[in-house]
Picture 1 (tube, rainbow, N blue to C red):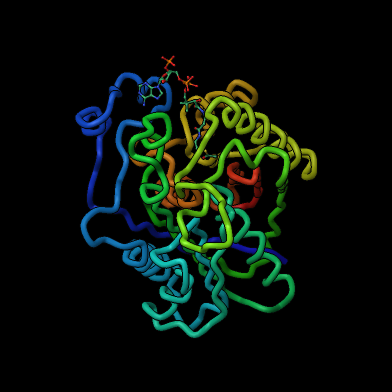
Picture 2 (cartoon, rainbow, N blue to C red):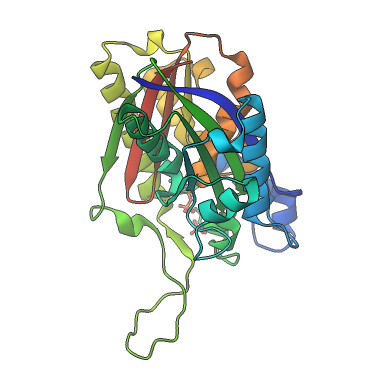
Length: 316
Ligand code: ACO
C-alpha cells in the first residue's frame, strides 16, 4: 500500500525581482549572487497579494489535473513556515476557499515540509483513513528575511505548489532525520516582538542563517538520505531516473552531483525562483514531470531548519 501523485500545480507571485533589481537598493551584484548561488531572479509577494491566493491557484490546478473535485479530498495539508495569519491556519482558510470540509493540517517543517506531508499522507493511506490527499506548499520567505541583510535576503523567493496524492499499490520508501537540538541555531527565525511584560526574550522576528554551516549540513544530509534510500531498496544511483533536490543553491546541487555523478538526473530551477523553502520540491516536480515516464524511479530530497532532512523514493 502506498501513494501515487496524480496532479500538480503552482501559484506564483506576479512580481519578478532580478539580482540587478536588488543591486539598486543594497550592496550586492548579479555576479556575486549568481556565481555563489545560481539564483538570477525570484518572485516576491507584492501589493495586496496573499499566500492564500497563491495556494488556491496551485491547488485548483493540481485538482484539475487530477480530475478530482475538492469534496473527494480526505485530508488537506498546507506546508508553510507561516501563513497570512498566525491563526487561523492557512489550511483552514484554503479549505474554505475551495469549499472543502475535510481534516486540515498546517505542517511547519521549513524546507522539508512537503516531504513530511507526503510521509503523513502515506500513513493516512496505510491506515485506511484517506483515499486522496491534497498537499499545498506555500511560502513567503520575503516576510521573514531581513531586507537589510544581504547575506540572506538575496537567497529566497515566494511561491506555492501543490500535489494531489492518491492511495495506490506503489509503495514509497522514506528516509528522514531530525536533529533538533543539534544545529537549530544555524538556521532559525525568532518569534517576533511582543509586549508581554513578563518576559525579556530578545528577538526581531527575522531569519538568521550561518551559510557555511548550512552548506556542509546540506551536502552531507543529501548524501546520507539518498544512500539510505538506495541501500534500503538495494538500488544504485544508476537505477534512479531523476533526483528532485530542494532548490536552495546551485552549489549544493553541484556538491551532490560530485558525490553521485549523473548531472542530467538533478534538474534545477532555482535560477528563476530562488529558495522557496517547502514549495521548492513540488514546484520543481510540477515543472519537470512532463519528462517522466510511467515506472520511472524518482528521489525527492530536502533539508532545512531543524536541522531536518528528508527523502522519498517512489515510482512515477
Ligand atoms: N552580495 C555581495 N557580497 C555579499 C553578499 C551579497 N549578497 N552576501 C555576503 N556578501 C559578502 C560577505 O559580506 C563577505 O564579505 P567579506 O569577505 O568582506 O566579509 C563575502 O561576501 C563572503 O561571505 P560568505 O558568507 O563567506 O559567503 P559564502 O561564500 O559562504 O557564500 C552563501 C554565502 C551563498 C550563503 C553560502 O554560504 C551558501 O551557499 N550557503 C548555503 C546556505 C544556503 O543556501 N541556505 C539556503 C537557506 S537554508 C535552506 O534552505 C535549508
